[in-house]
Length: 311
Image (cartoon, rainbow, N blue to C red; front, side):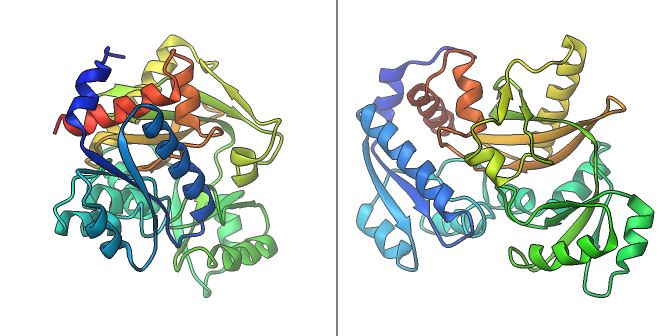
């Protein structure tokens, strides 16, 4: 990655406000991410404050009068364009993708439809509803992944191979979102790549003893394995990175994002989803990947801030 000038970046910054918390099911992870970012900014000597986002967020922002807002809200209300729209109206600069890119990325259906239209590979899927014929879906796809249309941290996701479990997990997924999709299960290896503007962080390979890299595998399991660099040939890694960058560019993303991809047993890559506000906890993938190329947490923050002061 290109070298950066710490003093030059810090000289451009005024008061930076970190937004964390919110009311989504991912609130607890957001609190940890937000606190980690705030503490890192303080270590760097940045004039920073932190806001636990609630119904009074407008009043808190007016009182803080920040020159830049760092959004560390995961899930609904923070990653879906809502807070971005508010900040646009208040004329407050903020980190990450804008309203439209955030909204599309948060909606797995809209992002997948766009990728399909552009010829970017992603697993076949369809909406599920209470009138769905569960056995027919199993007959058509075999093994399925049940997913809330919006949301992150693998909350509400389940892998099923029979009609009884499919119906049960459809209703469970509805606890996290009003719409649910079923997606053809891709057997293979999962990868995750961080993107910051025109630059990519090293891809990491994810391994777990669980059926897939679920919430516990991401945040609590001690035996989850992060392999970096991934066990891919140079040719396949290049292919993966091109797919990741095209996915990021196609949604009009800015700043930091993370793209999750499966490689099937056929060797082909399939886009899973794009996260416009990746986690910044000690278990989070982007900080882990950055560490593999000698970029510690505080330098990662500097690079994120530098990308925002460039536009």
